[in-house]
Length: 198
Image 1 (spheres, one colour):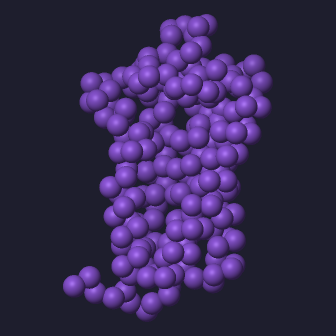
Image 2 (cartoon, one colour):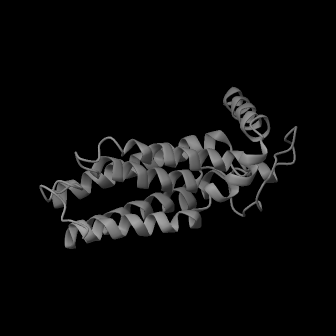
């Protein structure tokens, strides 16, 4: 465990300090902020409801339940059980963490940002349907970049986001499996072709 934590600190220092550039300092505080993505969430919801009507409602409800479960496991169970301090609150780090945002309250392990975004990404990845296969990989890149942003801005260790990402992926996969088992419908599989936008 000691060697694992030492590696965790080393990778944290590498990302938080050695990756430092003015443009990442400007972008990452906003990139990892969930409110930044509200327009994208609304766009996806709009497209889903336009194409799939009532069927989209079941998918959105299943996704919301999946993310809610992932968030509760991360924030209410693991964080309160492990009680690991955030790097921006850790006074023994040498060099100290570069905190680009206000250091949040609560604990560090696991990262709820990583857990929730990977739950979304994996749920949609597995439910995306055949026609979107080329593009659904971007969901994992998106979730991974947000998780890395948490380390870059100094509020999480790499182990926090790695375990959070694994937890979110597991919950997202189980949520997609349960959804498809009950509804037997995947995005883009319900209609042979989507209805025209105009």
